[in-house]
Length: 232
Image (cartoon, rainbow, N blue to C red):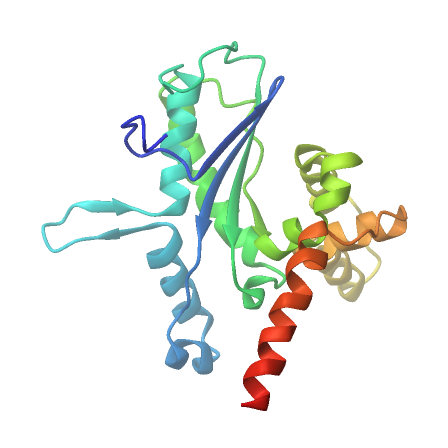
């Protein structure tokens, strides 16, 4: 897309029939003092700056991953996304994905915070009379999960179907009656598994545990280099 001069393109755009995957890949860290603070408000502020938006010195809003996804979704729904217009906007299902590169974000509640911001922006698209009913909630996916389960994703269950299963797993049903507060909290926490845990359990329970070829091809080479360096 960059070679074709397309501005503000997503990091990856994949359409399989009526299913569209929009992926923004972000390799980022938060400052050590913030991590060590154990202060949720500082965490939230840092994630907002890294993944939602910032405002520059001129007072201009600078979009980050969430806003970038929203921008692409708007183009797709208006059929203004130049690389692909061979679909009807009411027929497609859009899966927004934030691809991370650090294990430290595979924690309960992180996805919920980012999706909260995402849903607020999605509602603004609806106010513009755009058809948002085919847009799925935002899912945070660690890149290692895609590498580890590459074979199963290619040969058994495609990513958009696993994302659907994850969204079903994390959906909080309304109107449930709980006998104790502890029971209610346990139910809520059970819906906050990060995608990395879900996909591992999902494929393991179904016996899809084959390692990806790239680990066989590159893994021993990496370890061999480490052994060579340690001997010098």
